[in-house]
Length: 157
Image 1 (spheres, helix red, strand yellow):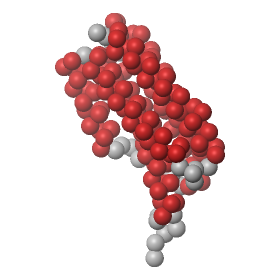
Image 2 (cartoon, one colour):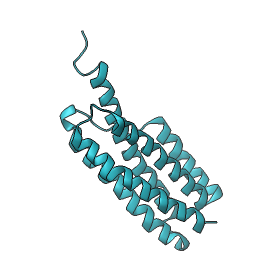
Image 3 (cartoon, one colour):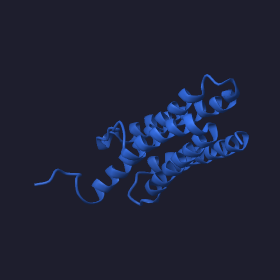
Image 4 (tube, helix red, strand yellow):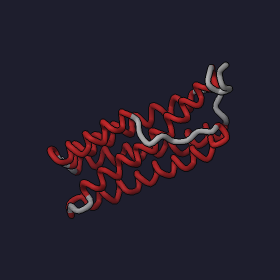
């Protein structure tokens, strides 16, 4: 006999909730890794200020998403394979190729978060407060993050 919520639509919702929390949590960690790489470089202070704001946006999203879905018994996992790979690539590329390569990897992370959140937003069975959070704050934040990262790529050329 299966546990309630482990099959069908409920399981799919839980899976998507978890992916969204994971994406936001790990994006925040990825930005922290980037900040660790560039924090001491005087030429990267503007970039670091922007990355710090974006990191905090992702961490706030984790808190807000978690609060909305605690009734569903979701708890964020520490990491997914994609994020481990991105974090390792970020460290390596920052060491070898500098800021531009690291910023490009952060843009890929934003794109991944956007796709996961869009999947959640598209579902008809998601509660309105969650949809409102995703559509009203999280997706627009990702658009703003992407814009900042695009400008940073230009500045690092």
